[in-house]
Amino acid sequence: MQANSIISNTILQDIRQKGHQSIRFTPDGFSILVSDASYRPVFLKQFTYESTVPAKLHPAECGRILSEEGLLSFEGETVLIVDSLAITVVPKQYYDEARGRDLLEKACSLNETDQIQHRFIKDRKMNLVYAVPEEINGLKSQFSGQVRIIHTSECLVSLSDQVKASDHQRGVVLAEVQPYTLDLLVIQEDQIRLLNRYALKDPSDFIYHTLNTLKQLELDRETIPVYLSGIVHEEHELFGLLRKYVRFVRTTPYYLEELSREQMLHFIILSEGSKCA
Image (tube, rainbow, N blue to C red):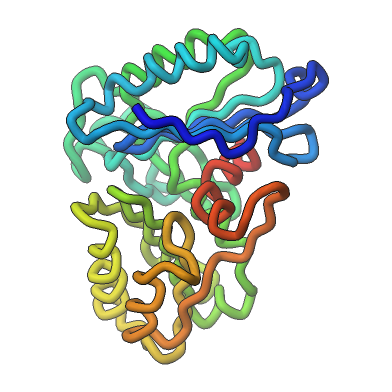
């Protein structure tokens, strides 16, 4: 395991009582962010593993680290963010909680031990239905305070509020790129046209999926902007490569104290998770 300590300020008791804690699980590890009541980061660490380490082992190691930091007893808000590929979107009028597993199984494969959860996105009048691995549910039970489990896709929908209203009308693509996953959100006429996730063998694969989405939805690459977040920033080679095919490539507007622009984009979903909770 490789640990990257980005912010290591003392977590004061007031923050433990009134602050925000978010933990994001990805295929290659997890990240922990603790912010004060005004969402200013005070603690941020990232832990990554070799691909040979099964993802189902990550929550147990995360629990050990949280215990060492005294964060299992965090009294403020805690949110666990899952990157599960098992997710589907169901319009409000068609959602039946009793059929949640059946609906999800029609869209993707599930493990028998997965717990099915849903989150109603009020502004979009839709339910996100997703699978939560039993290991993450086990971690949730170790906290003494209130814990919510949400999905990366909900954070991306929330992030879309950061772009201009005119983009929502004309059309806009948000892409959140991590080493092994891509989340794509397309909004047009202020409605979600597509919300999808992809497993990546290489981060550069996100360009194919983005361009294919634009083609399939008949979106003009000369006028529709693509907003990027995750590991791709202005100086990243993949940012310049995408600009060869899409005229308007931008990074997602956001502000997070204590972090560089590159770091902020990398951990933008981790930060937004607390605001979704």
